Amino acid sequence: MNSIARRTLGCQAGGCLRPVTLLQRQPQACRLGSSRVVPTQRDISTDSSKKEELSPLGKHIRDMILVTGPISIAKYMQLALNSPIGGYYTRGQVFGKEGDFVTSPEISQMFGEIVAVWYVMHWEMLGKPPKTTFVELGPGRGTLINDMLRAAKRFPEFFKTIQCVYLVERSPELRRIQHDTLGCEFVNTRFMADKSGADIPVKSKIRAHGGSIEVKWHDLLDEVDMAADSAPMVIAHEFFDALPVCKFEKSNSFQWNEILVDVADSEGQPMDTRTTARLASSPQSSLSEGAEACNFRFVKARNVTANSAVLLHNAAFGSKFNEGDRIETSPESARVMAQVADWISSRNGMGLVFDYGQDWTQGDTFRGVKSHKFTNPLSAPGSMDLTADVDFSYLRHVATGKAQCHGPIEQGAFLHAMGIQERLKQLLRSTGDEKVQKNLVDCYKRLTDPHSMGRIYKVLAVLPNRIDKTPTPFASPSKDELKKLKVEKIVR
Image 1 (cartoon, rainbow, N blue to C red):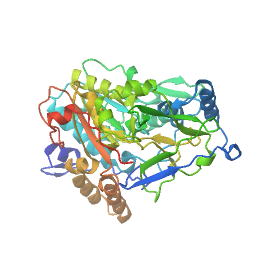
Image 2: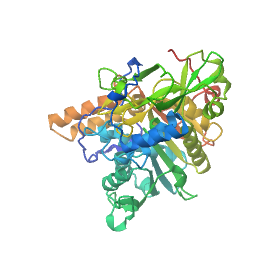
Image 3: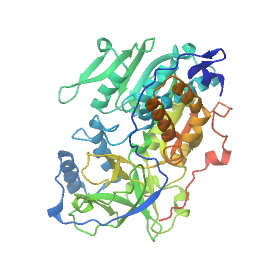
Image 4: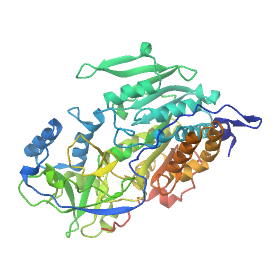
C-alpha cells in the first residue's frame, strides 16, 4: 500500500494514529449485487376494473399521453423521478432499510475513505492544484462526500485547497438531509422556500472538519458556478443509472422502432415486452407482478421517431444487431458526460464514476426498485426508483477528444488496490466488540465480493488529456479501445 493510502487510513512508519471514528451502519439490501440474469415475460391486460388507483402524478402522465400520444421511456422516467407533482426523488427517505435501496457509502465508512485516498493521490499527480472544488452529482443523503471530507482532513496540504463543495440535487427533502449530514451551520445557511413554504438550503458553510468550506446546492449541472481557477473533482456515484433512457427495437426493414409508454386502455395491441434484470438480494425478479393493474403499457412506434433518427445514426448500431434486438441509450448521460469531460480537461481536474452496468450496449435493463425488490417500472409512477444499467462504452465514447477515460474496472478490484483490507484491519483493531467486528467484515464483503457489489458495480476514471500517466489502479487501455464505440450483440 502506498504512503498516501497509509496516511489517510491512520498508519505511518512510526505506528498507527487513532483511526477515523468508526461509523456503524447496519446491513441492508442494495439495488444490485448478484450477477444472475433472469428473463421475465410481461403480459399486460387492459381490464380497467383491475387498475390501480392513479396518483396526481399518474393522472398528469395519463393526461399528457391522451393529448400528445405515447411518450418516450426517457420522458416517463423524467416525470416519474423528478416531477414536482410527486416525483420519486422529491421524497426524502428513499435510501437505507426504511427506503427502497442502499448504496455503497451507506454500507460502510470505508468506501468514502478509500475514494478520498484516490483523489488525494491524483491531486498530487496533477501537480497539486492550489484550489480545488468537489462536485457531487446526485449526493443522496450526503454520506459519501461527508466521509470523503473527514478522511481528506488527514492531509492538511490537500484539505486547505478545497474551496467549495457543489451538490447537484433536485430533491428539497434530500437537500435538507445533506445539510444535516454535512453539519452545515444554520447561521450561515441561505434558504429558499419551496411551493409548500418549507425551507430548502441553497448555500451554507461547513466548519465541522477543521476548516471553513462553502457548500452550494444546484438543481442542474449547468447551474454550477465554479471558479475558473479551481480544479474540479467530480464524483458521480449511482447517478447515471437514474438518468432517462430511450429504448429501441430493430425491425425487419433495418430501421429502429422506439419503445414508448402509452395508457393501457388505448386502442391497438399491447406489445409483448421481454425484460432482463440483474438481481440484488431478492431471490427472483418481480418485474411482471401487478402488470394487469398498471394504467400504462409499452407500445412500439410504427414509424421512425425523432429519438431513433437522432440517437442511432452510428453505423455500429446497424451492423451489430438483428431483427428483434433491443438497445437502450441515454442522451442525458451523454450531455452530462460531455460537460464533465470539458471541465476536467480545461481546468485540470479529475473524476470518478461509480455505477452498475457493462462496458457495452444492452437492451432490456429498465426496471423499477421498491422496498429492496425489482418491480414493474410502469406501476404507480412516483412510488419507486427507476433505473437502467449504465453503458460505460457510451460514456467513454462521448468523452473522446474532451478528456481521457480509464476503465471501467470492477468496484472490488478498485477498493482492494486502494487499500480497503488495510483499513478494515485498522477498524477491527479499534474495537473489541465482536458484533461490531462482524458487521465490519460483512460490510467489507458486500462492497468487494464478486457475488455481491464487487463485480457488477464498475468504476470509471476521467482525467485531463494532457496527463500521460495511467491513474491508480486502472490498466492502460489501447488507443483503439478509447476511440471505438463498443456495441455488443444482445442475446434476446
